[in-house]
Length: 329
Image (tube, rainbow, N blue to C red; front, side, top):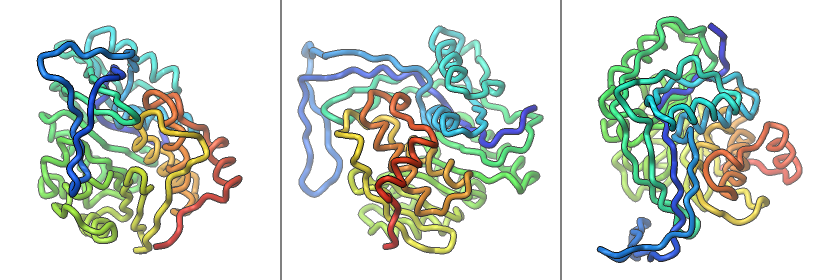
């Protein structure tokens, strides 16, 4: 098999972006969470629907990393349907190797409904019960990136750890999905302990550490105690924060030169893929965080997680032109 720079692992989905025009946001003063509200038992008009295949954390990361020049493969499942065919075609067109993407005949490709209102989205998700198996033969990649999988397949995590134990040269990046967070840190303690770098947003970090409302430095330190050498937490309009392998704290603001936000789907994946790619290319942590912020800032100006993705050259140009870099905090 080919030796890859990066192998990403996790579910994919076709995303149907439904742009809403009639809705309201209901936000409590003392909570960051908001609720989207629509009339019950009514016909709600919508402006448009845009269908985008090959979504999902690990798929988005694979497509972004390939665009950034990494030789990338993707381990995932699709159903025996047109959405599965479109997903495979999209991955191929994006330069992602699909040797590890297989079709499960008794399942449908995941399909998400993305309720797009103003500049953000609420996603209705349903994970098919895909059965993953770690490949018996895999040429040792530089990095493995693990994210969301369906809630019936804890065995995959055990297989990954067994393989990593035998291949110490491969580094693990982990971006926990909903099911993996619900499992709790004890069930996945070996994954956390083997992780080189973890990516999550602030709300996810609070759930992982069971520390709601904590200061960002406390959150980062709590995540690192689980085992990851580097912890990165994104925080929407506040940018992103990092506690690196040398216990230095960093903060990167939002990059604003690409214009206003259209919608935020895939911003986190754009950030983590660019940050990880920068590390692969030998960049230091402050620069890697800048790469992530620049890529995310471009993605949110387009519909969906793929159209705004940047090349390595585009990110480097933007970063050097503005001397954009993370600062110690």
